[in-house]
Length: 271
Image (cartoon, rainbow, N blue to C red; front, side, top):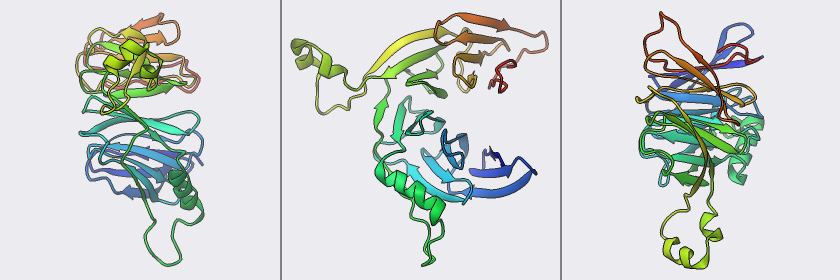
């Protein structure tokens, strides 16, 4: 049966069986509020949660064990506001109040083995706790896309769509090899081995007037072709991500407050 995750201020992720409305389990481990969560794109029993405690956790929602914690030395330095799993299931992204967007490998050998153990041996015979993996080093990290809190970020194929408080959505690609492609004279000026390779390639930007406060989160349809976002005036805009064409601008006389979150129906006919 499909699962539903409900989480919030207490930092506990509750897993509900949608078939009968029964609470399957409560995932306890975060030290503060949970700001976002998403299920794995391939293995629907795996769940990612992003927390105010500066960490991302990977859980097995069926066996109720914490598989991995992504935090530490090169992790986020403030609240993690968003998390999303790549459609291949090989990695996830996270963004937060430290203005950064980070990519974490889910197909790394030690993480993949821990995922397998969470299915086959969640409660070891020696009665010891499940051996959770701790990952401190993201595969990629950048603060070059936004200058303020990154309150929402989602995969669009191999690209990333993200927003902050600058009244725009930004579609971009991680570009860690940029320096290696530069001409030699320019390379000597910019390539510093002491700095992490955090270059990005901006594809295009989508205007979002009136979205100059944080925690206004956009929604994407199942195909990731359309994005829906709101602003502080209660207006809603829908864009075609590929063409940057604004498909619709929706208003209602009784909607005057900030639109904090948007979502599409499964067939993308409703927002």
